[in-house]
Amino acid sequence: MERFCSRAKKLYCPYCGTESLAFSHFGICRGCEAPLSQRKADVSASDNALVAANEQINKLCTEGDLEKAAAALDAKLSSHSEPGFLLAAGLFYIRYSNDELKKIRYDLDGFMEDNAMHRENSEKLMLHAKMLLNHAIKAAEKHAADEGGMSMEYIPFLAEIKLGHVKGAEYRMNRIKKDENAYLKDYAEVVMHAHMKKAESLLEHCDRMIRDGKVNLNLFYYIGYALFLKKAYADARTVLEYLNRVGDLDAAKILMSDMDRLYG
Ligand SMILES: [Zn+2]
Image (tube, rainbow, N blue to C red; front, side, top):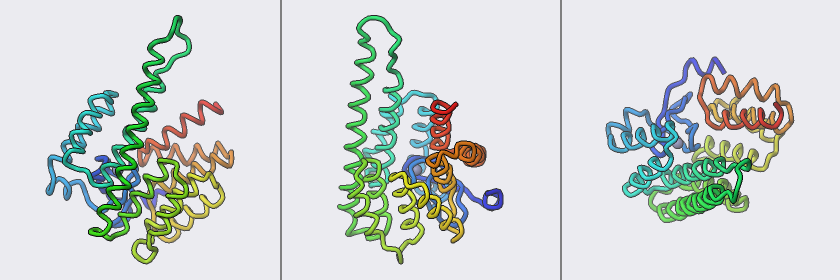
């Protein structure tokens, strides 16, 4: 992995405003898994307001003010409603919903009205997330005729996965034409195997992509996840800790804290 990182460059995701290490002209976002091909300076040159809006939203998220971040995100969606933006917004609301759920405390006395409020908020936010993910799929279908390209099947594929629709995801994955973008087709297979918790085939697919030179840091997260599924916790931790140092992946942090909680 050191060999790859030493020659990596940063590509920018316009949808969630994250920069990710990439090892060729093409990459995968470490935040929302969208395909990446532009540097931040390129996006900034064509749409500086979008980059500024993303920076503001991500700053509010870092500060833990998800309510204000949601308001800023909703304002951004009013001028950016392409499938990738809707997918990233759906992922934000899933995080927001989970955050509300974490506020529920069982050690409080009395009727725990606060808990009921957090549970209700969490459910509302999850419904909103699902609505955005469904909008991403519909928007992709609407634009498919104009755009034609791969990403029009890949983004709805990710949305189907997040919605837990395996049949829909399989349908989308089969429509991603291998000859048009083998990188995304292979990566979609990795995401699918991870979703199905198939550790052996997940490891095989990650390994094959890396050997074929289709490298991105998310693959190392999925290797860590496969090792976790195989109960090889020490090896999983080694991969995830290293990954966290070089790539700062939220997914790796979350999996590590889950492992800490479950297995100490
Ligand atoms: Zn992204």
